[in-house]
Image 1 (cartoon, rainbow, N blue to C red):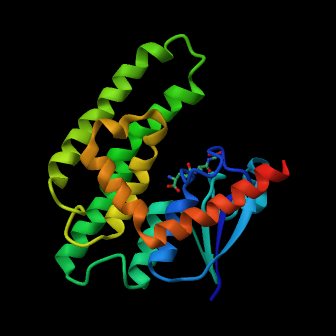
Image 2: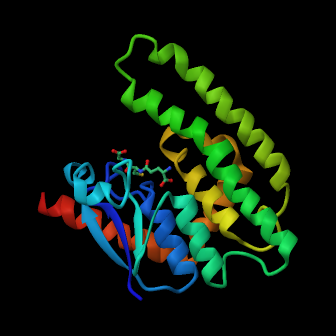
Length: 217
Ligand SMILES: N[C@@H](CCC(=O)N[C@@H](CS)C(=O)NCC(=O)O)C(=O)O
């Protein structure tokens, strides 16, 4: 059955892999599933046809026959459950890998999103500069804790899993702010994720879309 995902027609990051279709592409590449991509404009994302797929008018979405999903956590979890390669067979190890997916999305990503909002969406507000150090410190606290848990390990819990895929994807969003450089062990962890052939293919695919558009435009 054909899998179709949606992605930005023109990603705000210009193809640096920070838009969330990249994590879904990465998961699809890890489990070896071919997929098609439907590109959507910001305007189309808020129109009824797309809102039927995604109630919040965002990307990515995932279609597979009658199944329509949104939320990258749900999409990656669906893929990891259906195909080997992203979750361990052992029940407890599997539960821990899923825990790391939730931790990435619920505990680590929110302060990182707050930073993006403070640096970009709220940069003209009079309180933005004053707020910035507070937001950065909240992230640092999480990174210190994550770094302590990772220790000398290559991945968060044994072999690479969907938990690492999600955590690396979330941490990558810190790169524009330069905060990853403060944590060489986490920067190396992210680099290990980026070095995976499946990530490289996912990145190249979204890069091709965005560079083709910027050359045309
Ligand atoms: N929690 C959602 C977030 C989705 C999301 O924020 N998507 C962004 C692109 S990375 C988007 O569509 N932004 C445009 C908008 O919200 O209008 C997920 O993980 O899928």
